[in-house]
Length: 147
Image 1 (cartoon, rainbow, N blue to C red):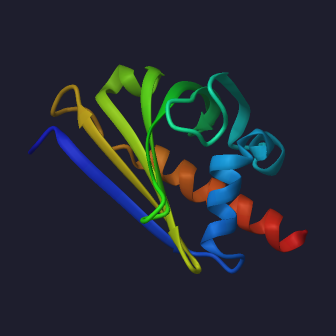
Image 2: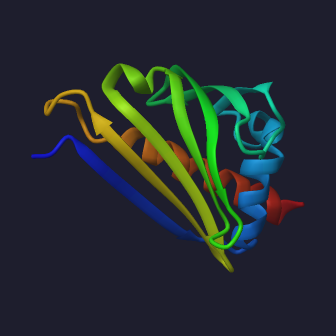
């Protein structure tokens, strides 16, 4: 069993993938209000929201426990409508040597890819964080359809 892994989820959203992607990447400060059971706090430390090199911290809930992550936007690809976030501090790095989240969209679809390297072979696959992102996507979609 390898230490490197990738988990991908693609969900069809009725409000359009671009709308979900816009909230997650450009209006992230609204996530604690849109998804309060999953996102407690979001703060930009360096740069600007959705811009290459910007650094942000997140307080979020995973399996009912409050977690922390500090991330940097490592790549933005306008051709693929994707953004890559790299974890640079926090709970994820207790279990993983590296952890990236790649968000992308097309038409009615939003895709999240988790790319990681486990510290040991006994480290679990990050299913709980994948479930977190699925929940956030559904919360954003519900918010957008309501408004």
